[in-house]
Amino acid sequence: MQFFGFEIKRKKDSLPIESVVSPTIDDGSTLVSTAAGYYAQTINMDAVINNENDLLRKYREISGFPEVDAAIEDILNEAIIVEDNEPPVSLDLKDLKVSENIKKKLTEEFETVLDLLGFGERGHDIFRLWYVDGRIHYQVLIDEKDVKSGIKELRYIDSMKIRKIKEVKKERDKKTGLETVKEVQEYYVYNEKGISSANSQGVKLSKDSVVYCNSGLIDQALNMVLSHLHKAIKPANQLKMIEDSLVIYRVSRAPERRIFYIDVGNLPKIKAEQYVRDIMNKYRNKLVYDANTGEIKDDRKHMSMLEDFWMPRREGGKGTEITTLQGGQNLGELADVKYFKDKLYESLNVPKSRMQQDQTAFNLGRSAEISRDEVKFAKFINRLRVRFSLLFSEILRTQLILKGIIREDEWDEFDKKIKYHFKIDNHYAELKENDIFTGRLAMLQQVDPFVGKYYSKQYVQDNILKLAEEDMQRIEKEIEQEKGQQYVDADHLGTIAGVTQTAQQTYLAANAPPETQEAPTSNTQ
Image 1 (spheres, rainbow, N blue to C red):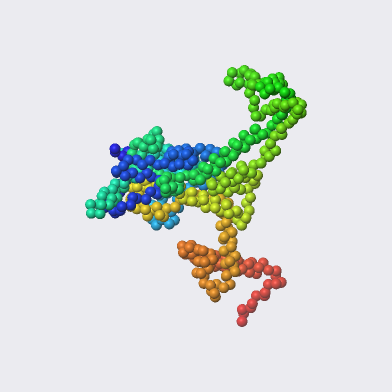
Image 2 (cartoon, rainbow, N blue to C red):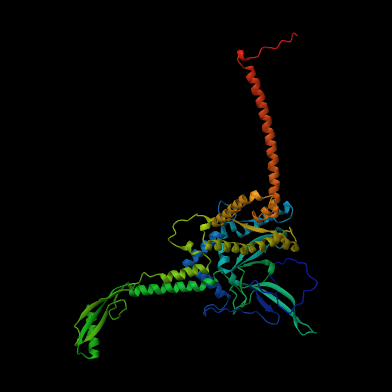
C-alpha cells in the first residue's frame, strides 16, 4: 500500500549501523516486525481496561467528574494564560546565533503556526485535549502544487483513530546466525472507525504528514502512552463509590420508622401471619403515582425497608404495642469522603488548599509563607509546558523546511536554541524570586566591606549574585555608559552654572544703588 501524505526528503546515510537490538520505543508507538503483523496491546486494570482505546475512554470519563474537572481547570488556568489580546506563548531566540533577518522570519512563521492552530482562541481546549488523553495528533495539509507556500491547514485527529507504527526489517547474518536490524520505517495507521486489537487495519499516513505530541509518560512493560490522569483513575472511582454508598445509607437510615407488635394469641403460624397482614392492610395506606400512565396505584402488598415494621407477638407476652425506630445518628460524618477527595487531589498534583470551599479569599502573603505544595505545583506546570511545547516544535520544523528557510540537517541545531516562553501568572513564583533577590542583596551588603581585601569582585558576582558571564558583560557595559553620560551631564551643568553666575554678577553691578557704586578711577596720570 502506498503512503498517503507528503514526505520531507532527507540525506540518506550510506549504510545503517547493524544491531541485534530493536530501536527504543520512547513515544508509545507500536513495534511491528516484517515476520509478523500488527501487535495488539493489552492492559488489565481490574478487568475494566483491555486496550488503549478503553484507556482513553476511561480518561475522558473521569475527566467529567466534578472534582477531577475542577482540578484540571485549575491546572489549565495556570498553564495557558490568555489576557490583553496577547498570545499565550512566544518565541525566545536570544540564544540562537543567526542574523536578525532569520530571527524575524522565525517569529513570523511561529505566529503563522499559532494562527493555524487557533491557539489564541482555542489554546485552553487544545491543552486540555493533550492533558486528558496524554497525546494529540494533527494532520498536516499542504498544496502539492505549491509546496513552498507551507502548511495550509492543521486538522485534528482523534487519538482513538490513529496509531504510530515502527516497522523493523531484520536480516539473518550468514556467519553468526543472528538477526540484525537493517531498516526502521515509521508511519501512522488511521482508521475512521477506530484502532483496536480486533480492527487494526487502516490507511497508512507518512511520518511527516502527521504531527504528534505525547505526555512523556510511557509504560515500559506494556509500551503504552499514559495520561497524567492515569494515577487518578483509582482514587476517582473510590470517591464515586463512597459517595454513592453514603447516599444509599442516608436514604435508608434517615427516616424514623414505627414497629407494630401485633398480639396474635395462640393462633397457628399461618393464621397468625394472615392476621398480621389483615391488620397491616387495614391501617396501612400507600398510594404510588405512575408517571408513564398518569394513574395512581395502590401498592399495599409491597413492603419497603423505609416503611413501618409489623411483627406478630405470641400470647404470654405484652399486648399490641407501637414503638419508634430511630434514624441514623451519624449521618453527618464525612471523614471518608474528605479522605478520598484529598487523595484524588494528591494524585492530580493539585494543592489541596486550592480546592477547599472555605477559602473565600486569595492570600497574597510573603513567599516564606508559601506551602511546599505550591512550589511543587509551579514546577509541575513548568514541566507540562516544556513537554507541550514539542507540538509547536514539530509544526514549526515542518513549516520552515517546506518554505525553504532552513534545511533538514539544520533543524537540530535550531531546535536546541529555540525556546518557547509561556505567559506567567503565578504570584507565588514572583514572590519567591523577589525574596531570593532580596536575600542576595542583603548578603552583598554584608560582604561589600571585604571586597578587594578578602573577596574579589568576580567572586561576589559568581557566588553571591549568581550572575552569568553574559549578564556580567552586559552590566559592565551599561555601567560604563551611564558613567560617561553622568560626566557629560556634569560638565553641561557646570557650564550652565558658570554662565548663570557671571550674568547674575553683571546684573547686580548694573542695578546697584548709587551710594554703593565705586567711584570711577582717574586715568589722567
